[in-house]
Each structure stands twice: as C-alpha cells, then as structure tokens.
Image (cartoon, rainbow, N blue to C red; front, side, top):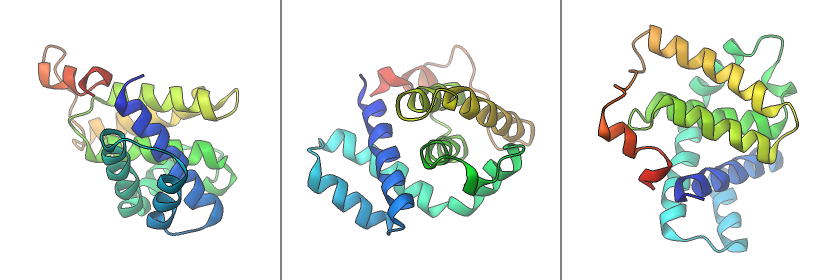
Length: 157
C-alpha cells in the first residue's frame, strides 16, 4: 500500500475522531499520533489533508450539500461525510493530484471504512463535484500524457 493511501487513511480517521468527539482538529491529530506509530512520510501528507479540510470546511461542505441530492450533510454517516470532505479538498486544492486518483482513493476508503453502499454513494457525489469544477474552470483536466500527473498518483508516494 502506498504512503499516500496510508496518509489518507490516517486523515479520515483523524477527521472522523474530530467530527465524532467534536474536538479541535489539532487535538484529534495529537491523540491519533499518541496512540499510533506514524512515520513522518505518512504523517506529513495526512496533516496537510486534515488541516486543509479544516481550513476550507465551509466551501467543502457547501459543495457536498449541493451535490448530494436527498441527503443532508448531518444525515450522512460520519465516515462517508469525512471521506467526501477529504476528496473534495483534494479536488479543490491539489491540482497536482488527478481528479480520477482522488475519487478512486475516496471510493476505496469508503469500501474499507464505510458501509456496503459507501463506494457508490461517494463516487456519485464526487463525480458531480468534479464535473462542476471542470466546467467552471476551477479544476483542469490533466493531459493523459503529462508525466507530472502520472507521478501524483499512488506511485508518486
């Protein structure tokens, strides 16, 4: 498993803890790191993701609400909600990571940590958000032959 995947798993766990216990994100990060041994390579990207979600949460939650038909944010499972937040942060703020990678990673996280339906639920919402961002010039579609984008996936560490 790639280090970015492990970072995303850590980020989802920290976001879940902060959401569930209603604690500050830095406290949730501290508690996680106290209880689990985490290498710097995994921790650095996870911290970037967690703090990014926290910093941009209003915009992220607005997009999720807009594209989750018939689902209020508060009614979503805490796991699904935080996986969506993580992926939307990447879609909005990490143009070096192809949208396809962010979405696939989120779907895999949903399958691992969520319910039987989490993967398709997450995929549907994120695909709508991706399309909206691309159509409005907020996210560029990477060229298929651009090696920079190739490296941003799991092989890019």
